[in-house]
Image (tube, rainbow over all chains, first blue to last red; front, side, top):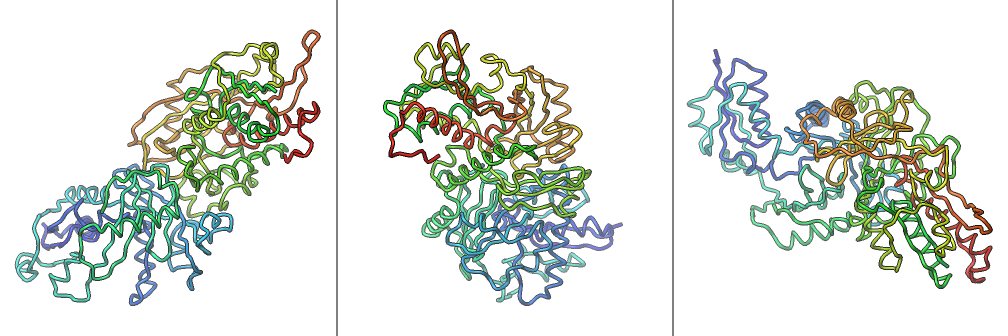
Length: 274
Length: 348
């Protein structure tokens, strides 16, 4: 008998995986996932999905390591299984390159990915503007596949899904014993939390199936992530920018920078813009 | 000066290219002709996955290791050029897996970022206890050969679709030098007991989430007789077998099953991949590459041949190094004939 009624708000990767986690591990809970947007319309769907953490200054490093380690191992098990292609999870190798040698050459997650090492001079030759680089193998988790796959898992254990925008948590609380708020950027309005702010990103989807390895500029402004059906090329990092429309100048900048890192992209057809 | 090349696989075409590059401005007129009964996309070079990797060990054939490296460096230099995709060249990283610790391979210096696999990485491949990771290149014959033919066409090299039955045939028609790049069938032109077919069968599969090549090695079974998978620009090549002495060009359903099961065990996600096609090819295997000049006596005449065949399962891997060496041998011939202008000392 499911005695505890749980509501999870938000169906991006955070909401869906939280809902699945609770539904699968706590059988006395009945879990309802409520969200305005579902795949392929969530923020998670637009992300390339490369497992490459960013260091948060206000969270203890050991926690970040633990969370990343658990996520990595969990996804690795999926990548190693027959489910890998359905779930959209697979190994991805590549380079992170820096124009100037960073202060922290070995980030906190270096030992958690595979084969982390510094790039050799031979490897750096391709990038004359960059002085230093890291080579490693990590995982890629494509939400366009992963979210639908998680949804199936959720429904399989009795999870319930409601397509609805939550605007009042107090009202929601009348019907549920616990609420897990995974509404992402939506929390700004939902909780009146001014500390939540958008960081706008724009990408291009290119058809370049010959690209197998990723390249990321350590400054975070240029990245090339080969995916299952297209290559995600980006990007921008515009804080407090709410625009959902495409910016022509951003697009030109992204193309120009990425072609400089990977000249073969010149031959790539544009499949879509995000 | 007429040079006739027999064979239009990667060896024949790249040899034509090297000869043109080195001598077109130093020998006039220089006529280069390529004779073959099979052209791209039907050659052995076209069917191969195109993965740059020599056999693990060269058994003392250090020249081959050098030619392999030369080819790698040459192909790498095209990566940033606008032609790289037309040529079918791109980087790809991956895993060489072994059942036991093995000595480091001959190509460790040539490839990028060569390193041993960690214990953690090996856990992804149950049954394997040792191996290496590196970044290498793929060069797809189905793109590279048309690019080469285009390149040669633009420079006046002529192609003839014709099976050559003897060297004499070409010599009689005016060839000053014959270059034998006839691959696995070279024995028909001149018997060579060291040349044998090493039959390979592969399955091409649609599995675009796979981004790494994986080659397994079993010293008991020999090179390429154990599973391997090599993602290409469109499809993944899954193999394989290496059957010395087997001339059968037909696909075997028994081997298909064996190859498929081996690959799925290695990479479980393949179970959901769509199988597109099977292909069988004959690698021109030999104890070592035959790359040398020969003067053949026939009746009262003698004619000159440069042999460039026997590249086994590493033709694409070694092609440029061998083409350059063949051009060097041709240069020697020209010098002996006094046909090279004196100030342009051979820079080969």
